[in-house]
Length: 242
Image (cartoon, rainbow, N blue to C red; front, side, top):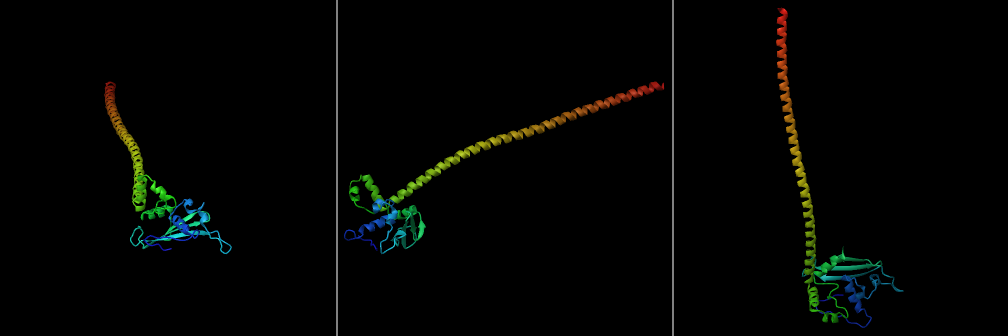
């Protein structure tokens, strides 16, 4: 179904499938609430078959946006968003036939001010709710539709990431303090070890000096003793000769 930039109106009698189009838009834009799509479960959207036709294995809706004005960040003329639901209830999202996460699809849509749960799609009863909204809530709705909210979301995400980074930085600083304290203790132990080695070297040197002094003293005493013995022997030899 082609849509134009102007106002598009879908007409038809009851039961002709007008609501199916809004259901399809809600589905492909990533809505999770099956209430807005008139189905208790996502898998109930799959064709169950008839006597003439076999049941389908999956349900799929694709929406294609004109991106000639580069409203989306993807550098392509057309942006295709596709959502497929299997019988097990699992949904698969694709952007230009490349499988993506639901959050990636929502972020891409937000660049164009499209929020699947916002007021881009106004269901029955929501006009009354919008009219009775508090001005602050109404302002948020206008921001969503105008595309301002995406920047608020990015800001909020950046602030959360900044908070995480600051927490991580605090952890790193705490670890750094601990490591610095540990290194300081190691440095003190190193200095003590170096001082001990120096003292040990000095002790060996002084001990060697003492031993050398004692050895020199004993050598002198030995020389004196030998000298005295030599003199005594000479005296003995002289007396025996006389």
